[in-house]
Length: 444
Image (tube, rainbow, N blue to C red; front, side, top):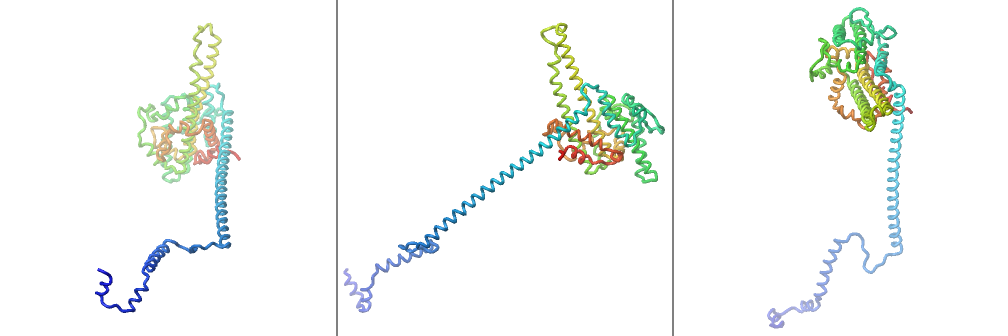
């Protein structure tokens, strides 16, 4: 069908409509619609002012853009330089801190060496008999008790005991040789009197003041007796803690586990006293570890040196063998001195605990509470250590990160603590940590 036929079927068309149709450019209208849609999409994607196509930035705009980029580069360089300076400052500060720490360590080390050297100069020579070393340790502690009411006669060689109601003299050397039964009787007599005095003190009676003075005197006397007995023979120290003071025989079983806990409740130690006990425990077992390593070093040298020559008979190698025997005696003397030093450490630890950290009343309560056993230093220290979850004895003996010179110097501070005790210190509470720490701190 032709177009003219279609138009004829539609009927006549007005001339105005025909004019409009003849002037309609449908291709242009189609392009405008597409361009309008593309423009809307572009405006949705592009933000900010856009230069129209074909326009060029002015010289002022180019200058501003150049300045903006230059400022951005300057800010970046300044930031990088600031970060570099801060990193250098942090590194320098860290190095300064390390140097100051190292300086303090060297100062402390130097002070420890000075204390160890002083201790070595004051110590008895290794060739001295073991008995003289024991007597020196005993007399050093007794001199402290002399300031606290202990009475001695015969130029300080005899003790005066009043437990039986009269003055009774006994030589200190004889105390060390007493049989177990006699020591048990003396201990029992003192404890019974102390128990009666404790009742008077707790009752707040008129006799409480005199009862307290009696406790002081009896505790000092009994301490002197136990010290003289302990230092009389190396085996006596262990016997005291195994001796049944009521029967004079040795216990065959260890003390019950509940006994130390009950003792802590009875003595009512303060938190400061318990912390002092823990500090004393660390120093004590550190000292024992140091002595054990010295002893092991001596024993390590002995086997090869004491053996006679495997080539020549004894009578043909007499000079060499005599030299070896002399060396053996020197090592034996060193071992005896080591054993005496260990006994002195036990004595010093016990004296610090019972006559420095504890009061006379607490010590009296401990004696009565633990009867027929004598108070055991190690048991009490371990009880407090378990309560505060302290390191084990094995770790302390192993060294705990300190060398032997530091242990020796630290123990010298304990000896200085003993020297600081007076009558009030022996009967009252003398803080241990402050004095021991000051003795170990480097001098400025």
